[in-house]
Image 1 (spheres, rainbow, N blue to C red):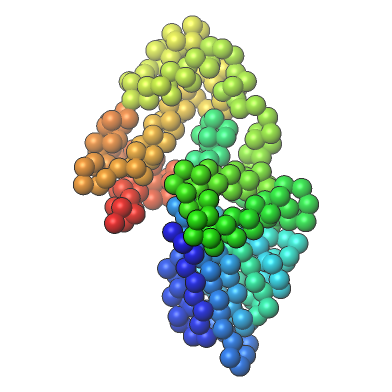
Image 2: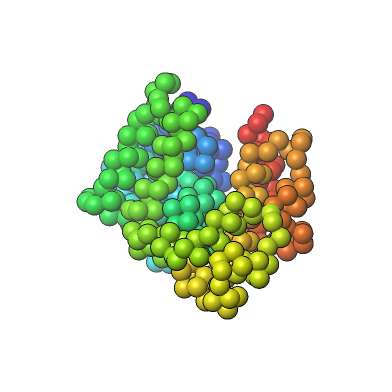
Length: 326
């Protein structure tokens, strides 16, 4: 989708535009300027939304919970913000603001001279990318550090990537709009954030994945579950595949994968269901059918685990696909 541009001196129009592409909000103008005008250039692109945003006057905004991961990178001016019960922080041209999916979000003061690049990443997209990079399930939500130093190292590199992709999005034939290349660029952007921001899994990203580093026997079990997630495996079945005792299998899985083999299997199944629902036509497929297809027989427990992992009920994922298909 090409860049959508909004320019207005009306607060309600600007708020409505941000709600359409980012989040619903309440906006208070702190300092009225004669003939002020906000300008927003937004590129919605799958699971990633990029924005080049400026209000033109001092404002205060309350968003509530975002439901997505979000980063604000000031190109000029500064932004004072807080989330949840944490103390206010300041985002500048040297320090980016990083927002979590959960926790009330307040922009205490968005300076009139502040122009920023905004990066919104769907919660499932970031967590699925992290799980793919680790080759292991992750706890949701992933707690990202609230700031990123963008003056050097991975933070500076990620800022350059954001700027490049934002500029590319402004071109009708930009690669970000390509159905194949664009998806790879968005994956690179998400993976880059996971390298630039501090979080509990960052050290593991710089080491071989547990499944890859594990003994051959454990890798055989992981490969079997990945190949046939719907198969009604028992712990005894998995131990037989590994060629070890049940106790040895469980101890080795805890050591090398960080969880029990059956927990790992449930995570694999959830990921397959999630991807299938994201790609399915709601007129042809149902949540129940998909859950059974990937080995879930207790639908109530499945729905609770799905919501805990992805932040929404499974039917909501399928419903969003219906809206995307229109």
